[in-house]
Image (tube, rainbow, N blue to C red; front, side, top):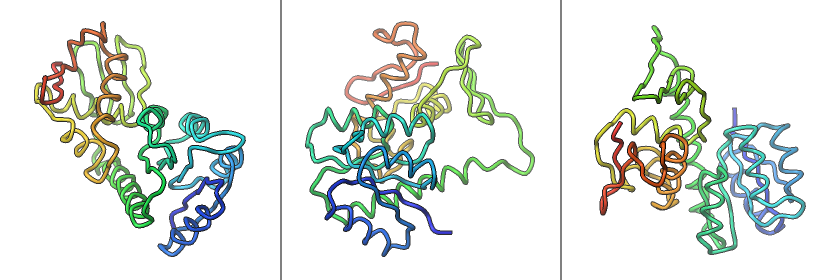
Length: 234
């Protein structure tokens, strides 16, 4: 079965170019030109990946991302004409998985799409239960993560993590007291083909601290190793 890609782009020339090139790669492509239509299409067709322009009529890319993230974990590749770090970081904070700044190389976009879909497939393979499944629970102090249920609790209360927040905290819990650089965390958690930059790690660490630290401004669990990266203390 062909993987489905939803293109959300209001520029006709870019939309047609994306549709043509992604179709040539063997994907089943659906293209819409505004945010409202994007949400309707995503709910109806259940795409494997969304290529989403930031500047859209009706609902912009930020609003579309925010809504999609409440409803699914579909990978989102955000396109933006703004060469502004604030926009890129906000897109990532809302749940976009990667971004490209216009003008972009079609070859690079196709590579990003393939890489994102490979990561999803790899994650599905890892999530498949073993022949004799056993419950695996990570516990440190008042923080507990049940890997089999994909559920985290703090002081017995369920806490919600965004997809990459969850991946990052699980990795850190599985590797306590080891120092990892931002590049190492990008490679191990996001995948070596991700090109969002080390700022992505800082943003996600800040979110995690806000959820699991008693005082996020003076963290005792996820510590910063100056000039190197981060370490999970326990």
